[in-house]
Image 1: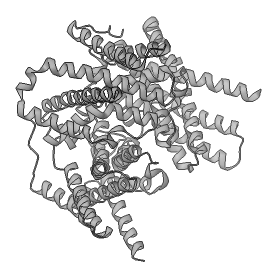
Image 2 (image 1 turned 60 degrees about the vertical axis):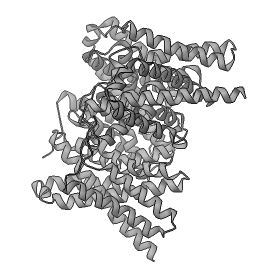
Image 3 (image 1 turned 30 degrees about the horizontal axis):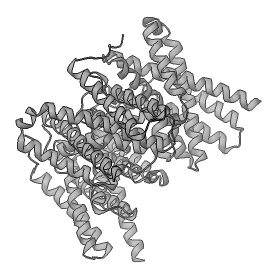
Length: 205
Length: 205
Length: 205
């Protein structure tokens, strides 16, 4: 019973995160004057790209090929951007929150899937960061921009921090639920602080 | 006997489609002043990129690693562009027809390979479109242009339509040959109509 | 005993090659004003990208997920570029030598891994070239430049030549060690001659 309710909360966050990731892709595609189909594809790749690369590296079948909800949610995101237009931009902060929660959840999912596959912590941390950030990198490559990941904000590093927190909690024997929560919250908080305080890493000399 | 003749026709279309896809890659590479080797690689990736991504997503060994004809046909395409130069451009319409037929065949091959692997129709439709269009996307990313797929023409959508036709024919119990033909012809006709009438999807608001 | 010493020499070259590949990625990232984390990621992808794509095509688990040294060496490369700055540039020729030796070794490793998986020579030659050159292609795509591979220098072609030498030596029954050495030296020499004499392939007409 409790497991089921956890699962449902996970699912809701998963869909909200997917929605926010898809909107970020569709929004950037609209700046580049993509057509509706192109915008949908960019939105979908932004949402599922990270998990797909993770699954290919882990040697398992990509998650979205067994669950149509990601394809559907991206369609809803496209519809929402067309109906609400500037209205959706006014929800900028809500979308950013969804995006951050999605990032936290994607990190935890990527970490746990790799741990279950028997990989050591350092691989799990990388897979968590790949799950969270590669979708945005693919989006930026496809719209022919240098990936934001490499130039701005603390994004993938927040995933790395979340992965380290997961590793430590797991090592000292915390329960799965607390471990997941602490790791995801770490990602969300670091991401929110970095953006709201405009914290960036030093440039390369 | 009949099976064999079908197989041979399939093979001929497969090679013609590969040739046309390779030429489109080599042509764009020449605009960017690539050297001969670079043009060959771009031609090859255009021709086999879609099927390779499909096979990786399906978890099977990429098709071209078991059949040297794709590597050879791309070499013939490079030779042809060097020998006939502008002559090949005069064949623009023939090449476009090859390209369209190739697109139709690639869509059907991608659909059937996914169906045989046990995936539901919506995944098969996506895999058909990926087989037909991802090679061109990889080509455009490598020559550092925004993928045409996202901005112009009805290309991947023609594959999607072909996949839907295949699904319906399969569901109502049509024979494999008729199903394949109807699906491929759908792709070819939509593609030809879209290009000759310059039909495009609306831009994103 | 002898086997172990060969292994150690291989390992040293592998680490030197990884170091040189990573530095080339970090250096280009610094021109694009990437932050430290972005530069690290670009360095890592340059170093392990080719072998990762090869392993995905071969259907085996990516090599670096079972051996943390690549992740560590890339960190050392980042540190070195920050500490020595222009000093490291003065080592340009040494780095180029490391890079060439790494290319030769990566080619041999890619060839042998494919041969062991049962693939014919032409696939092994392609896998050797993919191992050596795809990391640099991914680097160039991510920093939003047309891949150097397609425009300048003889790079992947040196890998192809090394693969052909390996195939011939293997066919006429030479010992594994001599075969490996001749193939790797072929890559290194062609690469050094091409760069020092500024030999390039003809452009496409």
